[in-house]
Length: 222
Ligand SMILES: O=C1O[C@H](COP(=O)(O)O)[C@@H](O)[C@H](O)[C@H]1O
Image (cartoon, rainbow, N blue to C red; front, top):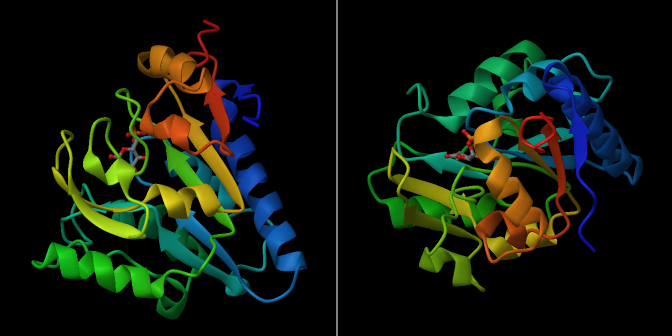
């Protein structure tokens, strides 16, 4: 069952998104042990990550993973890791052993993807997704054969959005995650939001358990 979207004011997206993620992380931690949080990049999640640093979560019990990464070094402006490092890891002083980075600087992309599979836990507790104007999520782009993947958990793919080479979690991993928050912002994504919520055959619609959270512009309310 696809959850109804949560629509908030643009300025509230960071705060509401952070509340959602913190609540689900704390629920996962309440079951005992550690919790896993997988992060996306792109233009939308930065405010959520910055707000998260002020939330009451026992961060020393959280392991951080990545939903996707561009094949660029970790200090490159297009690196999803760099966004997370600046917005979340540095402010929280997360120790390196709790950060499971996709190694976008590697020359052997296939090997980098299969090495990351070995790091992933069987099930991710909390996943933060975004959605592109073409309906992609993670680095799963419309029409890409990676969408048909049933066995591999991480793939190296080429997409239409620069930088083209990416590493991405596959649909079996995303669809098995316990809690998924999808963040969308801006009028440019309005049509795609409508189509994804209607369940059209688009990558972002394949993660059916995702709780989409968006500003009014993305929801077509302004
Ligand atoms: O390229 C990417 O795009 C999606 C959506 O990003 P946005 O900039 O349109 O918000 C993002 O979720 C993904 O992590 C990123 O690599």
